[in-house]
Amino acid sequence: MEILSGFFEYWTESYASILEYTYEHIAISFTVILLGISFSIPLAVYMTKMKNNKIKNMIFNIANIFQTIPPIALLAVMVPIAGIGFAPAVIALFLYSLLPLLRNTYAGIESIDPEIVEAARGMGYSTLQSLFKIELPVAFPYVMSGIRVSSVYIISWTALAALIGAGGLGDLILAGIGYNDQFMIFTGTIAAILIAVLLDLILGRMEKRIYGSS
Image 1 (cartoon, rainbow, N blue to C red):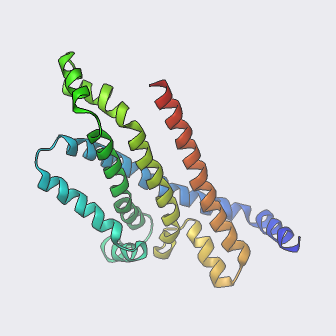
Image 2: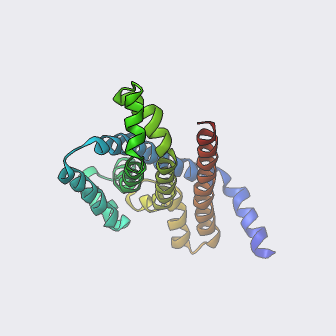
Image 3: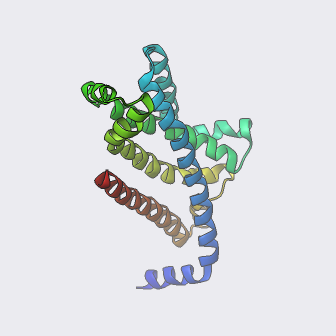
């Protein structure tokens, strides 16, 4: 009970700074997620239309290399390139978001039976009509799976962005380690988990609603 009352007292006294850290965390992670979706999904769709397998493999290999670099190392590499703060954190985390979005979108469209696409063309659908009315709706669960996986990873890894001065809940966790303050560490960790879980729930509901209606 003493721990709970101390935890409650900490939240009461520090809620303004907790909200500020949370806002910074959401700003970084949501910027990365939106950039990743805007870049990776159109690229993956374009790759399904490519005839050159060497270029496709090269794109996947590059995205795979970024995924294998430890997050803390990639953030450190960004410091001499882009300085410290928001921008290098967004660039580093954006590179991490590429692979799950690319692979899932590509796999979703490639899994469609070619006869379905041929039938759409036989009905007079243009390439764009076939893409938006047949291929993307059928591949939608794969695409959403990539978005959900990537989003949870990015929200978790955004905590490391505090190491290069980008702020967010990682700042709260690092300060807690520095002051040996368990309330600060628990608050930063729990808040990051809650953001990830809530976003995953929202995306899951969106997926059911959109896929159900389609």
